[in-house]
Length: 314
Image 1 (spheres, rainbow, N blue to C red):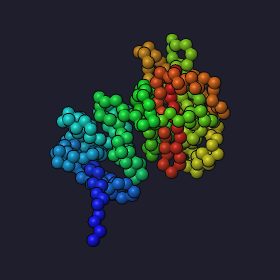
Image 2: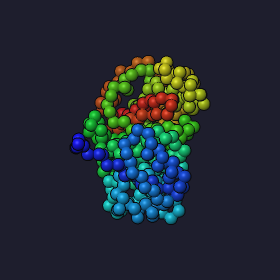
Image 3: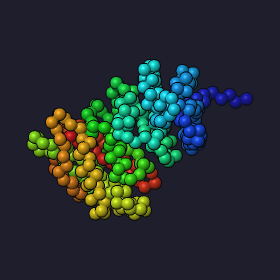
Image 4: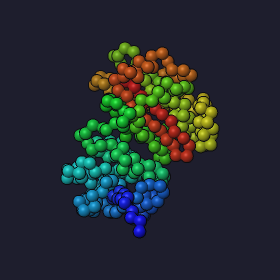
């Protein structure tokens, strides 16, 4: 008889909290199918039921709705932290889109926020990243950068949650993913790219610099213009945004001024201009090396493509 010496990997434990049994069943099906690692799923109908199961089940991830009878999702998250479960990951799957609510979720250590309706792949990707330890850490701790990240750096935007709302307003769809990036790859020197300059009252020179690679311009501009996915994919394949794409992307960069982090109480970041550049400008390397804050994101539209966004405080 051949003895099997390899130990099977224990299923990852996920607690799904939603007052809709239909949503519970949908999330269970998504997590138990596909190419994900094995998961053990339990369900609860509100935050109170979830808290009752935490000590016995010890979930590695809690997927929660926001609005539920009794104890809401955010109240459950706050209770978990007060009970000492600072390392327990909590992600929201919700229809809630109010910026103050999303900001409250982030400040309490939510690993991610996924809006309903969602695509199966988006949920699987968010859960897989979280179970790999790539989610936002508990409140009061510094973010753990990826191995390629290097030292921690200040962010260039005030709130990622509000930035997500800005994308939603301009894309006109909730079917997108906005993920933080920590690598220092030289993509920011690739062209063509849309370069946006910002100033602030009382400061000399540029206050901030925003960069969209050609793909991000096609995605943001194409969706904002109401173009069909096939048309956007053709622009992505050419690597050259159309003029309508550029104009709509400029409007997005104009609105982005309100999301820039204020370095002092008197700063009022304002949009100056944006241009689709065919080559990196001379001072780009210096801005990257000596920035006073930086935020990098990957924008992904499922089934269409992905692009990169970087923002620097100069």
